[in-house]
Image 1 (spheres, rainbow, N blue to C red):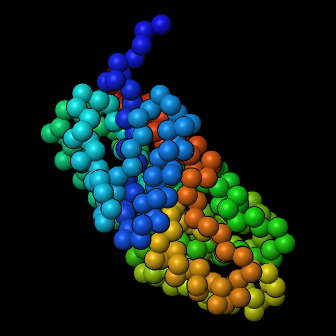
Image 2: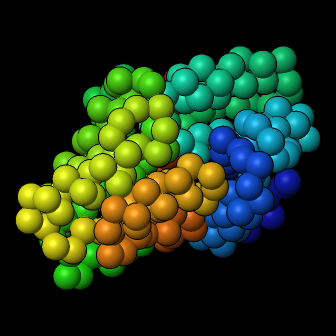
Image 3: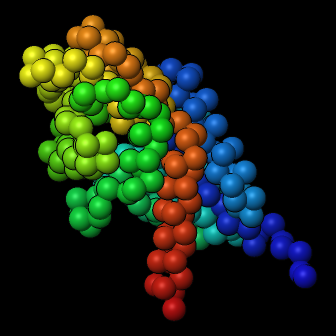
Length: 251
């Protein structure tokens, strides 16, 4: 069997938002390692739009002659997904790299894509919802109404999976705060309310969501998705879909 040349290996560039909180970069690096372990034929890199480094273009510039897939580590197709990441692909057109762009990890209003089952599986894994009466799905928040709609889709899908009421809430940009939803659910008769985490990594807004939910009486709060195996599978599915689309376009 022919040994693959270095340039035969697919480069997968994970693109995270970035944060001043070092826990966020550590979580993204852990996800990159998990994807690398699951797919040893790929070279997997972590990159960041802001704060932490390296930047996605820096990684792409280090990959001359390679095929690369950019994977936005985003759960909504808000500004970063619609503008920032496609702009990176446009800038990379001048580089000697064959770049494909994968879809965001959450559902996309532009394609009416469903909520990935693996995403819901990951939320359930992190929450461990035994004994709960209701759930708040806490997200970072966005001013983009269409992006918020996809978070509501995710809350509805999680509700169906758990057979429990599940309501979306936001740490910033748009009400309601997780604590407000916890209070509303408790007032309606739910004694044990948990907070599911629609976050990929810890950081300031995750901490805001946790504090808000706990102060309102949430009995359990889930950690971010991080390197959950379901998230690893979701990243891989986005990579394979992007590679397939690129090959179809070239045919």
